[in-house]
Amino acid sequence: MNLLNMFARRTSAPQARERLQILLSHERASTGGQPDLLAKLREEILEVISRHVTVDQDKVMVKLDRGDAVSMLEVDIEIPNRSELRKVAAG
Amino acid sequence: MAKVLVVTSGKGGVGKTTSTAALGAALALSGQTVCVVDFDVGLRNLDLVMGAERRVVFDLINVVQGDAKLSQALIRDKRCEHLSLLAASQTRDKDALSSEGVARVIEELREKFDWIICDSPAGIERGATLAMRHADMAVVVTNPEVSSVRDSDRIIGLLDSKTMRAERGERMDKFLLLTRYDPARAERGEMLKVDDVLEILSIPLLGIVPESQAVLSASNLGSPVTIANPDSAPARAYLDAALRLMGIDVPITVPTDKRSLFGALFGRRVA
Image (cartoon, rainbow over all chains, first blue to last red; front, top):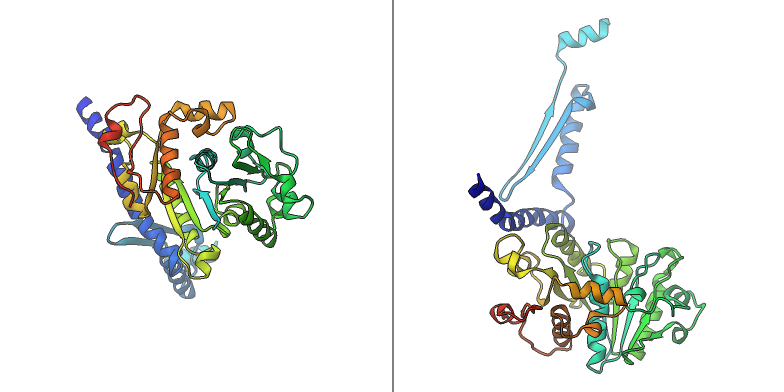
């Protein structure tokens, strides 16, 4: 455990360096040229879906993971099925 | 030809005011005429660090608004005759600084001094953009720590887009001043190294100021560290940085208070 702790402490500066390099490559891209692409994608995806189904804004989860080579935008939307809709209409 | 230099960082507390005072005094000690200007309206501190807090009668805003002449507002340093201070206002709002007014004051200062050093407030708001607006060159003060490096990167972007020089398509010289550096911790991998920060920010290095008690002692006394304790490690770093600003090629070292081998071991040339 002690050895592990020592190792973890030793690697903090390289981690800082790596985190900064990834973060800044994104920030430079978003403040320089195009506005935040991922924000735009999120907005338009939600717009298309809500054109066809009623989406509860509280049931939408958006996750973002910015990586070195690729970024992952995860949009998780809960769409009520028909029986659920009927229940709501009846109740 | 007068030079306007902005000392900026984005993040607060990294040493902008300390560096402004130390570099200003170092340049003045080598015979250049220098005016240090505090742009931190509402939270002025350069007067305090310079030990002139009881001598402020008129400030930058008074001059910008035409309530006082520049010569009335300039405070001549008592220890160093080539060094003057133009204080910020403590009571007024930063909105009282008009863009045209600042331009006029800077032009007037250019006629009187070799160097005009603008101490920027933290942040990227109006005060910070006005402080950099008329600069010919910039010193970006950075601590070897993630949030400071990120904010410096942002400020470098602003220097390349929001300054008069950038808008005219001219080159804006930017230099990195790494402060509060601890070579021993960096060597142990506990702190970002000089090369890490240089690689990330990719601007030339002006100097490395080691973490030192001498800085706090100097501000306690109200004196730039280059005057209060010129033999201390941070003072030697600032004195060398001032020489580099004047175009003199001095090898970059990390001075130490204990006069160990570190300074010699970390020898490096300016980029």
